[in-house]
Every structure is written in structure tokens, then in C-alpha cells.
Length: 163
Image 1 (spheres, rainbow, N blue to C red):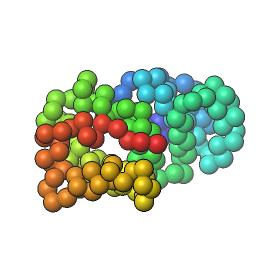
Image 2 (cartoon, rainbow, N blue to C red):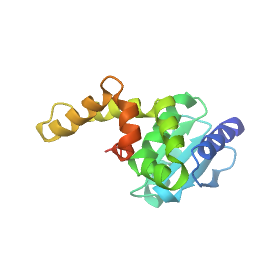
Image 3 (cartoon, rainbow, N blue to C red):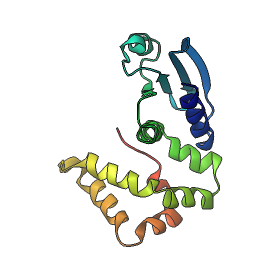
Image 4 (spheres, one colour):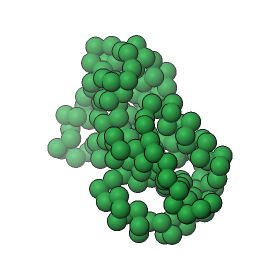
């Protein structure tokens, strides 16, 4: 549990987000609350989330709650945490308040976030006619060498991750 706390704390610091850590159940569950984005991350030393789920759903209604157990693959859960942040405006906040333009471009391109974001959006849009234009925009941006061009000329294109 302590290793998971340390990994999550280091991840949130690397993402430049302020958080508050609270103990829920001694030696069993802790909560990391990110007020800026309405994201709560519950870490537990067991896979059964029912122990805290009811209380969290009541106290953090309309928040994005991510559960991480000691047994989970932390890299997969890290992506889930980042998606939750992105759906709450994290990339726009990062681009406008925390990073220089070059830092943002480097993180998005070298970190693979731009490609992951575009892939996720294309998958979400599916074949629904109401998303046809948005899907075409994302597919065009994924084209040969265009991601770096979009990051240079139109970085706001990557600001939001829809539900």
C-alpha cells in the first residue's frame, strides 16, 4: 500500500496537479482528492471496492472517481487517471497555466498523448453521423506528420477529451 501511495503521489506531482491525501480506512484505503478537476482517486489494498464505494459515491457525487488496488497494473490505472483528468480540462489547464508551448508540444508528442487522445476520440465518435465532422478532423490530424503541425499551429485542438 505504501508503494502504491508513493507511485501515485509521484505521478500526480509529475502531472503538476495539486492534491490532498486523506486516509479512509487505516492500512486499507486512502483517497487522493484533486479539487481543481473534480477527480478523486481511491487506492486500496484489496480489489473489492464495495467497502468504500457507497460512501464515496455519496460524498463525491458528480466527481470522477478512479479506483486503484494494490493488485492492479499501475501503468493501466495511470492512463485511467490521466483520462479522468483530461475529461475535466487538464490539458487546457496544463497548456495555458503550467507549461510553455514547447514543453506542452514535447509532452504531447514525445509522451504519445496526442496520438492516444486522437485514437480515443476517433473510437468514441464511432460511425455516428452527429460526430462525422469531428471524426474527420481527428483522422486528418493523425495523418502523415500532422500531429506535430497541429501541436505547433493549433495546440488547443488537443485541449479536451469528451465523455
